[in-house]
Image (tube, rainbow, N blue to C red; front, side, top):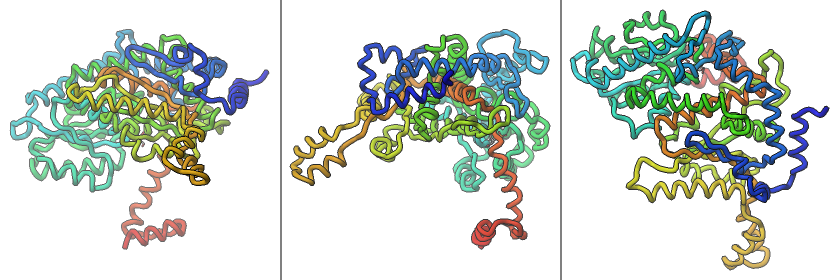
Length: 535
Ligand code: F6P
């Protein structure tokens, strides 16, 4: 019997030359190739997937047991095989009270206790009840963390700026001293709270930045500096070593992956910015998406369908990248956030069983907020030699009702892009334009060639009512589960990240060489670069 991948490939080859627009001859095309869930609409009708391909993709999900793997994750099975851990970030936002047994213990009471501790702390800082060393209120918070201990909070704090009524939040991630220097020099240590966020509390960038920030606090506050510090980690023993008092430490379990951690203590800056009640709305949105993922039938299941579109584009159409294009300036950090979520999860060439993958896995994820991207790289999206599936995000309403004209323009631009990508412009149409511009003969043909758009380029659009804590929770959980679906189909462990280790090890070995120790044994390029950089 022909295997399902071959069938998909054959479907794709048989449709070669077919235009996406022709699929709309089916009057039910939009209804069948879009899905709504709790206010969110995902439209994937502007892709080359036809009914037969969609059926095959749904069959693929069944054959690869995506639902079974999903249920195992939610049950708390140790699906992160290489690290022998459960994967339960969903438990941090769970709206149910069912016991959740992990390692022989019900995890729910601990989750509730931590959330309560975060809320007490955040309320205390926001209200001024928890005061500075000098007895005043904290005006600024600096979160020191990197990767999953940074990108989620940065992205969400920016996204939710209309709800921001707490202290100002700043983020330092890079070990480049430029970032911490630029950040601290505009702040007053006497009214600044520093949060050191690191799951492992060993990450060199974070530990180095933490030491610099602690010295900055100590210079101004002496021994009282400790009252301006808080920490977020799974390694509570290590936080004590830094002198941070236990009631200022918010712990979480190792079954929360770094890039999935903004729902718990890593989300403390978000809670400080928007308050506990709105943070709970953020969790509720994510839980609503979890419930949808768990219960919606496959052909109406948004994360499943989004993942299957990803599989189609990556493995069948063989597109190497995907562009994330939020028409929402407050989601400007979403592409960077999704880069880690997606590429650290699914950028793997080894299967869950330790064998080399037979087919491509995660694509390159990149993007930029619209409309800025239009004036930068969309040229390539429309007329470049590579086809890049685009993923648009756009809200029906904005938080600026008095600036209606802006939002109407934003929406029109978003829709124009997906339309232009799909329809393109034929040579005949371009020839007419060139003629109208006064070109004749060979010059008319040349001018028309420049103005021709191949079109037939796929996109998806995710539409939401308004960017709120709730809808942001839905959107992030949707992408998390999409990554899960794709990883499940590829048969990889989406929850480890061994690929970042080698660089870390080599960097530690290079530090003494940068400082002047012998670089013997290194390759000639590295030796020459060390010499140049030490000059
Ligand atoms: O980049 C590797 C990584 O381990 C990420 O997975 C993680 O989010 C980041 O470093 C930061 O790790 P930590 O929170 O332990 O400092």
